[in-house]
Picture 1: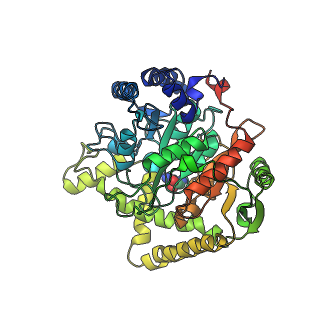
Picture 2: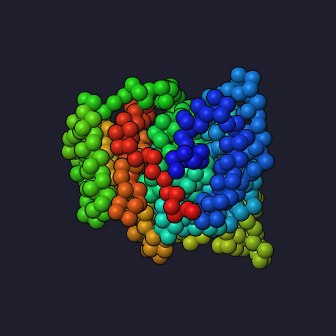
Picture 3: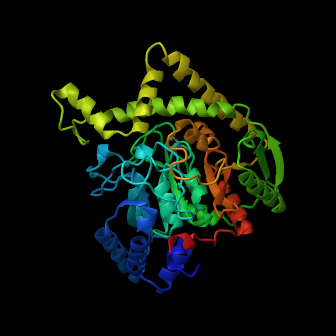
Length: 492
Ligand code: GLN
């Protein structure tokens, strides 16, 4: 099974392309036919652009033939969450509101990928406007977990995680506001990285909660994630929150770092009641593995952890209510055919265009920002956010990396939580803190449950310390040795 080309890592594919064992055009065709054979079951893609993918692949082949290869991603098929703008391609955000919207420009991260020679293959499903943890909030389809098609792939970037896990693309980009890269990566048994806030430009990412959103990679291995992150990171004049920092060669620094002599912090607040016993056991063995690799394990406390969920749902909804005001039925969005006047047009277009969860958040966000409640909710949430950030700052005085479960459970059944928003919100209890603090976090596979479902371990690093964070995860992944397992049996 591991001989299947569509399960190879970017690093392996790069070697094959360099050696002329396969061309990018042939590789792209492999992913196209793989997608045709499994996506009917997985339902990860919302749309794709076969002609432009093949044209990009042929251009890459021509470059290689002339010794003009642009880097590891040259000729590699990459999937994109359908919140990421590429000129001439649909950008639906899995919403009826943008069902027919075609982006007139390419966002910065995607244009960097284009310049690196990547081939875009597949626009991938998500919870509408990235709001959710299961992909069930998509207006178009429910993506399925490739390891068990009755289960959710996680969310909101569930399409990206499922597409990589099912071998529909070599790697993918998603976005993470409160866990939307790490939680689906954990559910689908792949690597997912949420970069430090400000490392990757948000220009061309449809905004959900601007102070939390980051674009980041999904990949089969930590090395592939390092390659992808290196290609998209860096300061951008088009995003005022992007930060001017040097972007090191993450891939090259993988071999330099190790867990030997590092202090791994284990926050006691993350091993709570309600966490699935198999998840706890797998993460605890993961922590033991860190110790075997020479790390010192230290219990730490992040005392404001339990406030993160309410703080997140105040700040994220407040920002969402403002960001989504632009979808007004007047300009590029769905426009109601039943409106009687311009005010009615706003109401009806938004009522028809947005799904339940998006409406719930707009209402909640407008409420916490309204006069009389602003101080009691929004301002207070911002103050607590500062305390949450300070908890991490203090912890990082003593530890090099923090290790936790990525999610309290393995992939849940489709439908199981859909009618109970609060239980859905709890899926992100271990990831949202990292966004509130603006830190880098990743999920790396650390084991499987007795039902054969993947379990992810989260590593959290210091701001802009992705090079070290990735090198710890790389050391862990090599020692754990589980990235060769694939979900083939459920896809046949
Ligand atoms: N599941 C969380 C939410 O629904 C996080 C989503 C995300 O990171 N985009 O808000």
